[in-house]
Amino acid sequence: MKISSFKLSAMVSRILIISGLYQSAVIQIHVKMINDLYSQIIGLFLFVFILLTIMNIMNGSNFTSKKSAINIFAIYLVSTLQTIFGILFIIITLNEVYWIPEVLMSNTVTISVASIVVSIVASFISGIVATIFYFRATEIDLYLS
Image (cartoon, rainbow, N blue to C red; front, side, top):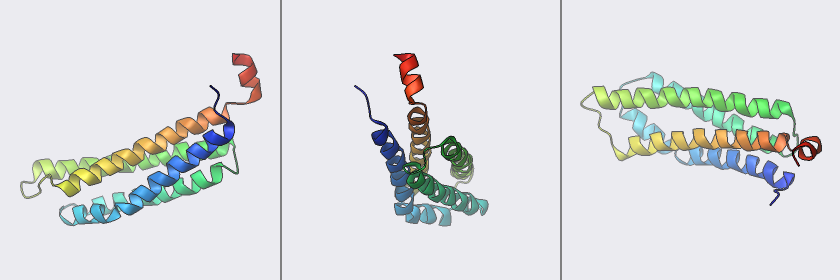
């Protein structure tokens, strides 16, 4: 069964947009969790992570109109930076939960960390689908078949 190129490009943009809107929906949970922690830099990591998520929303909306290697590179670059800041956010959060007895592993911490992981995975899945879409040129289809 062949998937059309339009469906793949729409899938990339939808994954990135849904991931970004999901982060916008759970921002209150992130802020509530940050208020319970002692680290001050974690707010910066979350801020940069959310900004990169917004950039990925823009990449997703541009991908359906401009299908080029530069867009795929932008998706991978932003997703990699998003992953770095997301992992830093998770590491600091879990270190505080582990090392500071006053900070407990509450539902807000669990939901916040899980939503960061979901967003990271979604952005890399969209990058993989964008790569598959880009390399579905007719020359490659003819070569593989």
